Amino acid sequence: MNQFIDIDLFVSQNITKRSKSYFRDDIARNSAELKEKISGKSVLVIGGAGTIGSSYIKAILPFNPAALTVVDYSENGLTELTRDLRSTKNLVIPPHYITYPFDFGGEVFTRLFQKQRFDIVACFAAHKHVRSEKDPLAIEAMIRNNVFNTKTLLDLALQQKPDHLFSVSTDKAANPVNVMGASKKIMEKVLLAYADDLKITTARFANVAFSNGSLLYGFIQRIMKRQPLSAPSDVKRYFVSPEESGELCMLACFLGHSKDIFFPKLGEDQMMTFSEIAEAFLRDIGLTPDYCNSEEEAKEKSERWQPLDKSYPVYFFKTETSGEKMYEEFYTPHDDLDMTTFNSLGVIKNSEVNSISDVEAMLAKFEMLFSRNDIEKKAIIKLLADFLPDFQHIETGQTLDSKM
Image (tube, rainbow, N blue to C red; front, top):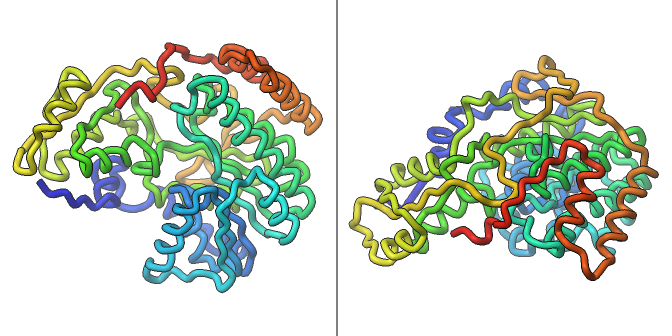
């Protein structure tokens, strides 16, 4: 077995099936404008140690920002980010570069924001996993991070008015069926409420192949630990590479008009199942799948597996977890779309906008609900649906924590 795998090459050959970045042409066509808006500017990246945030940083550095401040609650992640940036050839780090390991919803972050003016603010800090939908406590934490912390950031931004404010969304915000997608759809509403006073854009995009914590990233961990690969066989997803995720966010941050929601113009034929990717992953390291009928069978076989074996145990299953769509979408039939300005990107225009006072009233209702000791998941789902008429929650009684 060849245990070494070139992830970038694997992604381009087996997942995105693109030899170059999907967004390269749009970046080249708009390079002068990007340079004008980034060069010499002070940039704050929140959640910058994650896959998308760090890829955004790598996308903007060639345009020579003067200062880069990165905030992330993961101290280890910030350490690796700095090692990665310092170790990458031809990547110039600004003279003023500093990382801070704290939460963007806390008091220390507020003091940072009040102490220094940033020309560009890009936020990637969020609960991003459908598996975050477990019980009332987990859901409250997700809504506080994705929604309440976003409003806190916007209130701070009103005091210093950055040139650009970007906060990442998700394709799961279109016709949401899970709490994570619903929380990001409400986050979009919060962003748009401030978009007359601040230049605000966001982006919905596909799964980022091998991003931190993703199922595909888990494939690497399973092989390293000699554990079976497990994946749904019926869920289809769009994918972009880590590099593409950062470039998409850079384009959306600087080239859009306030209130624009960006998305990649990917066709349905570009969706893949996770089981298909698992099979390709094994082929790339010289193995064939040994299909198992249960998790227990897969674990037993992996315990007996030897490096000279030519097959590897896998368990593929039909999805049965709460909040899982069979496929994803970037927009709804009711959205006003601009599909011509960019080669690789579509833009949702003229979204319905709530007032800041409406947003505050909405969050007050969530705060009142969260203050109860007897709160149940269904009560939070109902309140989400009150604010999102298109929210059709899929509830099966099972979460991804019950799967390998």
